[in-house]
Image 1 (cartoon, rainbow, N blue to C red):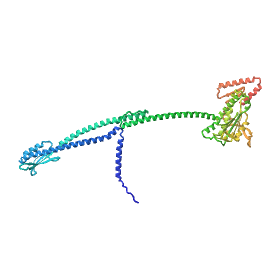
Image 2 (cartoon, rainbow, N blue to C red; image 1 turned 30 degrees about the vertical axis):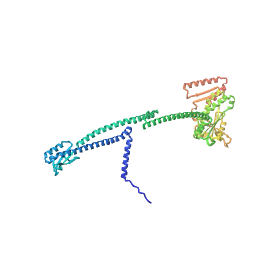
Image 3 (spheres, rainbow, N blue to C red; image 1 turned 180 degrees about the vertical axis):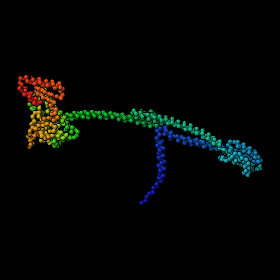
Length: 560
């Protein structure tokens, strides 16, 4: 296999080439970094001007010097020709003094550096000055016509100095330098003025238009009517400005249209969102708040599904409500039941209960789903809710009386803790979030077995709340579907409330109301209340039926 030979550049040569390239690039970059266009123009034109001026004046000086040198040579040749003729007679007669006088006369000329006269044997007869170092030396034979033919009797050498030539050249160079400087300055001034008028002014107008467009967005055309390249650039810039202005106007129209569409869409979405919020708020009234939040936050899917959990179930209804409802008009009945359900629902939601459904005057509530604390806390919350409901019914006696109900309404309540099936139960098109199972049946049976104003709980619930709630054993009941009897307990109150019970007392009857709050009464108010009670007892003692009144007073005293 044949391998091609490739020349390899030596390392030092490659390094030198790289340094030369870097130097050349650095000079180029230094030139490009000049910010002013004038500076760049001068950086380009100045070397050319200096070089061209030097060449022109150099050629002129060379010509002048050549002409002066030629004149000096002609003068030297004529001087030698004349003086050689003059020296022929004295040299023939060997008149040395006369020869010296002739040479002295020759040396008077400032251009003459030196002269020598030789005889026919080559010996120096007379000399003046020096011929050394001169570039202009001429020699001529001295002949004497003694017969038919001239006879060479000697030789004359004359050397001229170039001092005058150098002096004239220096003066001429100085003058030329001044002229060159003046010419350069004039050219630079003319170039700068021309550059300003042809380039500087339009560039300034362009920059001013660009800056104003950048700062204020105002599009200003540049007024420059030249037909050269600068004029073409300005015309192209003005055309670009017009197109840019048209594009910005089009863009602004599109932006305004888009904003209008977005505003319309936002308004439409806002209206739909408000309508949806109102609809969801209305739908929320048909669902327990916990279930509603779980569905809208994505924690629960709306599909037929259920699970088995340990819950605390609450049932309640108003004792004797059917008889009461028969005596009321439908509007009064609706107002009464709505007020009752609203009061009870507020208490249920305050304790975290999930309201399953309303059944006329009956309420079904459970604790433990979809939110739970734990089985014990769920049972305790349910029992405390029932106690608050019972207490609230006492304060609603005045409301019932306004509806024409003489006897205060009392509620039966039943509570049981056990496993139930809970979830979305029904069909794909219609479902309820509810509970089913023996736990719900047991709670319903407890509510039926309770007496008016009584809270009846199962042993399973009692086991969860017995440390905080005072309960009294009530016996057992039979529940359909269960093979065993259910032990029941009557809820008295929480130990916390019992500790404060002797400080408050309230009883409401159709013709008698007593409401005491010892913690809120001053000592004077307590004394006034005691006097009022004494006067009341006196009135009762003087009534026409003292035995019955006395027995009622005794019964109330025992209850208190």
